[in-house]
Image 1 (cartoon, rainbow, N blue to C red):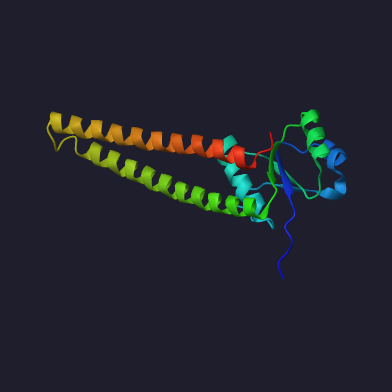
Image 2 (cartoon, rainbow, N blue to C red; image 1 turned 180 degrees about the vertical axis):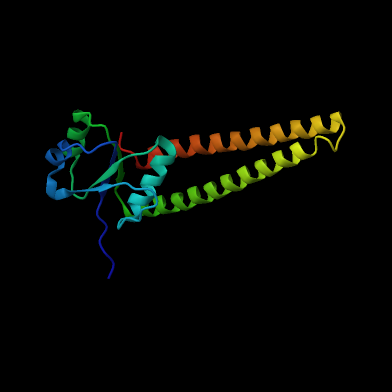
Length: 173
């Protein structure tokens, strides 16, 4: 039997603020400390925590809000609490998050491979200094710099595009 989907808020913060309890009600929240390489009962926590860490840096904890209304979001905004807030409103949005997370993992694999390639290429470049004449070695060095710039540019464009799309799709302004 399939479980009914229920919208949730995910609040990521540097330190827990008890005002969250007053806004949403303690019975509607669950707080979890975020730990490197931890597995969480809610996969969305893992996906959102990893993506938020990549885009914004490390957060100490997440507060999952299981029941809320628009008035609660308004109170949260007015309170100016230091939380990065994501909302999963539909099952389709949850599926999109999972797909985007898989794409993000593919990107990380590409980035690791690209970094390994650049490292190996720089080793070859260093080792070939005495092997080639100055013109060939300079051409290799310039090619290496161009490839490093291309890798860095690809990473920057991907990250910037992903950040904008991610914020538009999941973040509560």
